[in-house]
Image: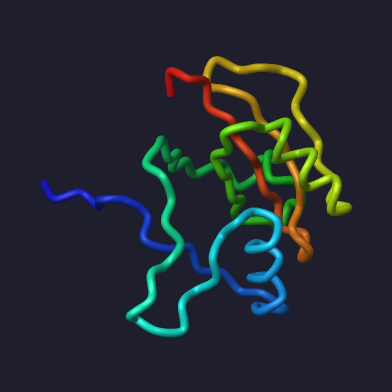
Length: 123
């Protein structure tokens, strides 16, 4: 059986696509979509990617109408949270350390939930 090799993109609607792309680039280091096919897209490091559909009534994403949530791997959760807070972005670090690592939550300017994940070294 053929399998997909990975996630090739994430596409979603926005009230201000240019502004939101700039926010993700400025605060999370995600490069904007190149203006030419000759330019390289944002490259992520290899690592675990969790693909997990949730029950429709889950409160894990926050707002009940929220259908998706981004989760980004980070090397140093505390340093990333401090960087975001210094830019005026509210970040909540989960005080618990889980078997697969540590987590924090924030929202982008349009209210979309973002989870930051610092995997344990064994991940």
